[in-house]
Length: 281
Image (cartoon, rainbow, N blue to C red; front, top):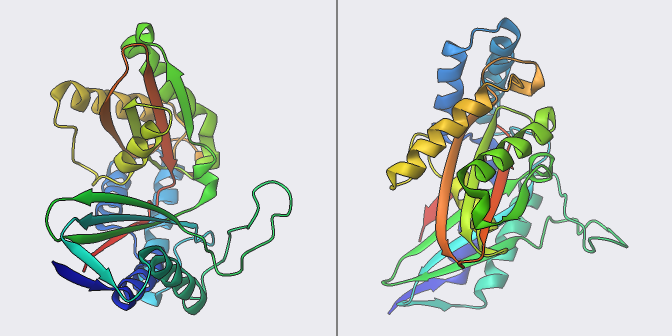
């Protein structure tokens, strides 16, 4: 049985909060550079250059890439042979988020009641936490500060099996066109297919954070990823909605078995920064 201390979890989460808001993931940065080289439309090319320069400035000055430093999503993968000592795991994570947003001078955007009071909690807690229990003694943290300009553009639809492949394509394209410039394109897109009403949104978020350039292990879905990305980049929305052929940097799909009567589909939209950072304890 391996022990992991709550104080170490708090310190790691704090560090991830600060760094994730300042450092663009390497795969996303490279994709921006690649699309800058291949973009033909002058205004789109200039916009991509601004995004690249902004990422460089944020990294070099250890400042947030975007003024919306997001709501913290924390994904914990914990081995069943791990024992948490020194307190509550959930409390340790929340404390790390609190310290990260306060000491990193990051914008606090969480309100305590979603409908009526909407009073700012002043420390960006509570974070949204998900746990996955696995074999062994691993303890892995993925922290994603998600801005809501793009989060608001995400959608879910309970398709029927008879809607088939074309129904999935139509829905994904509808979500992207509905989002338009409001999601701060170029977008990073995750699509979940299968599971249930709640499971499919998790699949979409997981797909959204998958490394750019990786593909679904099933060749049929891998081909669909490429086809959808091509279709999206032919919409002409382009960087910041100014036009061009770079509406999305990536589109990844995650799937899960589902009921014979259903075919849930979720589309998770992220702006070009796609902030997330990982750590092992």
